[in-house]
Amino acid sequence: MASSWVPGPELAWQLHAECPDPCVLFQAVRDAAGVLLDFQWTALNPAAEALVRGLGLGPSLSTWGDGLKGLPERGALVGLVDTGAPLSFEMRGRLEGTERWYRARALKRGDGFSLWLSDITDVSAERRSLREELEKERAARAREEHLRLALETARMVTWEWSEARLTLVWSPNAEAFFGHPPGGLGDTMESFLEQVLPGERTRVAEAFLQGLCAEGPYTFQFRAQWEDGTWRCYEVVGQTVREEGRPTRMLGVVMDCTERERAQAALRAAEERYRLVSWATNDVVWDWNPSGESIHWGESCRTVFGYTPEEMGGISWWERQLHPDDRELVLRSLEHVLGSGGESWLAEYRFRRKDGMYVHVLDRGLVTRDAQGRTLRMIGSLMDITERKRAVERMQEEAQFRERFIGILGHDLRNPLNAIMLSARQLRRRGAMAPMQQQLAQRIETSAARMGNMISDILDLTRARLSGGIPLHLSPTSLPAVCRQVVEELTVAHPGREILVRAEGGGEGIWDPERLAQVVSNLVGNALEHGEREGPVIVHCRDEAERQVLEISNTGEPIPSHQLATLFDPFRQVGAGRSGRGSGLGLGLFIVRELVEAHGGRVTVRSTENEGTTFTVLLPRDARVAARGGALPEEAHTG
Image 1 (cartoon, rainbow, N blue to C red):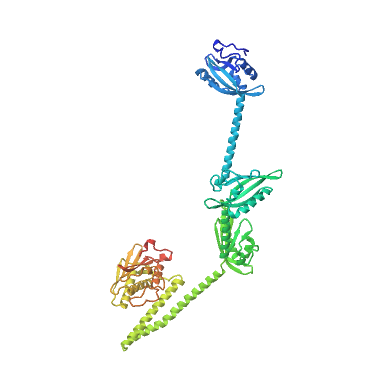
Image 2 (image 1 turned 90 degrees about the vertical axis):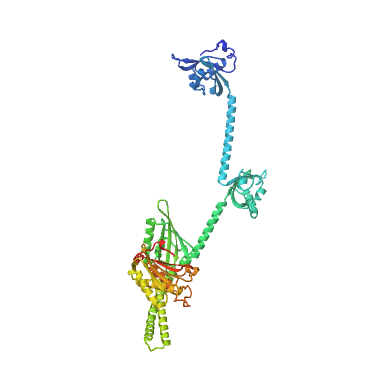
């Protein structure tokens, strides 16, 4: 290493020996091909000589990285030599045990460069200190922002009360938290108490005073009203700070617990409703975890079974209260629901009350399972259905009695009626009777026939309502033939009236001919009774796809629209007929509907001023389909 510098004449003015900043002149080191391998210093001023010696730097620039940190990459220095663009950078090294910072500037000089170093240790320290302060301030602002976001997310604000200043300091989001504009909350305890509902201000002020004397955290709740008139519920959590045993300040948080209070109020209301419903329905509610023994029983068990909830035991106790004849079936059904993944359970059995008597109960339960299908819980209710079962049994007995009674009544009435009709007929056939006597005999026979029809209607009503429907005797039947036979009989009974039969197609099907004759007779008789005397009654049969259509029409006054909805109900009459009085018991159309539906068909009516009244009967080709649960499709419904 050279100990002195002998610069060329062109650098003498720049590299003066008394220059205070270190300056080093580097020359490029190249191989035979001219490739730059390294830089080696060739001259340095006294300041640089002291620096090089103090840092232990070698003659080659590649060795300086051990003593000085921050040297540019060799490519940047090669660019400096090739292009002449100066470089500026910072370097640091440890000189006499102290870390020193230098600002470096490299300038091209021939096939090398000069390196000027300025000591900026003090400036760098100040700069680092400033950066540290800025980082601390940035971190503090970040913490404040995180705290603000946390408070807003948690719906809470912070507060601090000072004994010395008698002021109340809130976090920045307090005004929005309490629904006030900026500055509307104030900084005193009195201004805060003004936000509290009037009826709670005294209690809140006393709570703060008690908190001032409290050891450890304290909490209380209050309600405040927003400017829009709504109120919200808040919870205060505070802590008192003491110095030399004297309270100097209080600090804490205020949380918005409105939704929590509403949810709890809703839960309490739901529990109360559930309790009242349980009492009102007289059901015993139960809750069972199938993995354990215990069952939680509702309060109604005292009223229903005579037990207190404490006397009602677990699942084993419940099993022992089952009637011995029902126990096995009930337990098997419960095990099946639990083991098969079912969601609901229903069982009817006999249960032993506290007084030893058995009552009939209806037990219903719902099963709750986890994602894997394991049973977590089962909740249900027990209903005492003893009286209901007795009522059903009584109703069944009464229905059977009514059926037998009406059947016997109809049978016993027919015998004297037949005798009356035969006697009247015989009297009319005796030619020696006077005209008045003939007329009386005719009236007796007609009245007896009408009464016989009423008895038949009553028996059909009994079968339809109490015996599961009117029985049918099905066989191959021609609907047009049935219609012609009925019309012939009615023509004799109504001389002078025009009844026309029109048939399209064969009209063959599997039906009950006697019951179809009853349908046709009732509908045609109804048309004769209520239609115009001068107008015809038309009976129209036609084939249509898989069904048979029967239409019976008459002219005359239409049926009032308000009566159409109940026209087929029993004991309903449209009104007085041509005879001036109602016909029969009002069961004719009801029996028509029951007979048609027993065949799997439908009957409808359409009645207008211009078209008159038309009853339409739709029958399936084979009534046996109805017996197997079939029916006409919905589009078959007309009228």
